[in-house]
Image (cartoon, rainbow, N blue to C red):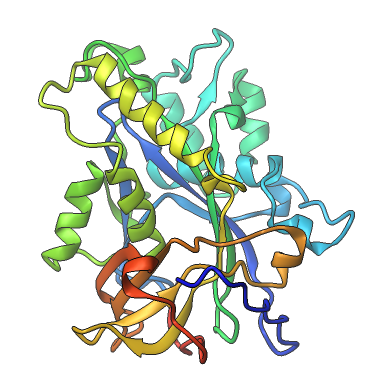
Amino acid sequence: MSSAKSPEPKPSKASIRPSSSTSIVLISPKNEVLLLLRVKSSPWMPEAHVFPGGNVSAEQDGILPTDGGEFRMHEDNKVYRLCAIRECFEESGILLARGPEGRPLWDMPVASRDEGRKAVHGNETSFTQWLKQEGGKADIEGLIPFTRWITPEHMPRRYSTQMYLYFLPLKDDPEPHESSILNQAIVPTPSSDGGIEHTTATFLSAQEWLDALQARSILLFPPQVYLLSILSQSLFKEQTPSDIDALQRQRDALVTFINSGKPPHGQFCICPEIGRSKDSSGRLKMSLSRPGLGLESHGRIGDRERLVLLDATKPLEPRDVEIVSSRKYGALGEGIRDIKGSKL
């Protein structure tokens, strides 16, 4: 992609204001990635595999700061972090919290955790109130910002989604034991929310998820493919999954990459735009270089080194999605536009 900057388009008055949301890229003790399968009846990304996450709730998570300007609503903060941990708990049953004993993950009996999940998901109590009653605290410090994604303008639904990375603790024995509550906490078995929003919750390596996409056995949208592609460069299956040192080196390499660059890669803000030009196989080129919402004037940028190739014949079912080097495939050129009806 050309290194020359083109002016950031001003937000259209007719465009829909994005809802604030979060997602967690949750990494298992084997360095696998959790994805949830959305139900067929979902109005958003039906039958797609997604990271745990959801909308910010003022009642549950707090009010997003706007002092200094609305651009502050699109920055990492405590509200987004609490939302990410709450949604992960509601959707997968995995509680990213520290209890009174201060361990990396709360040593809470499964029955108590399931009871709390049901109460929070059913709005019988707030997440923070339940945690306080149980003597725990959400581990917001364990979250690592891992890009923000903003749905393009003129879309029927728009989101400003803060992505986070979270590493579940490594341990000597990667296999959980039914008799050990601690092991169940450190290596939680993810579960669906009973079919309300998701039907399955599964840990696989990043490359296994990408292989399933290539085989057309699952549906993934560009943000998921982008982040899985980055993860696959550092986190891969070890021949000896119990090699703690090797697993930690993978994690260290990933964190080093996320924190590299000016601004760091983890701070990228991406508002995808699809161009008119196609590659040799007929796939459209999607730019990831702009932050959208006029945020470029506040120092935010997207990823200028990568772009997406995809078959967008059916916007709700993007196929042949691939992340490639913008240097190899060239800039989109003039005439970049959003394709109405695309769900990103």
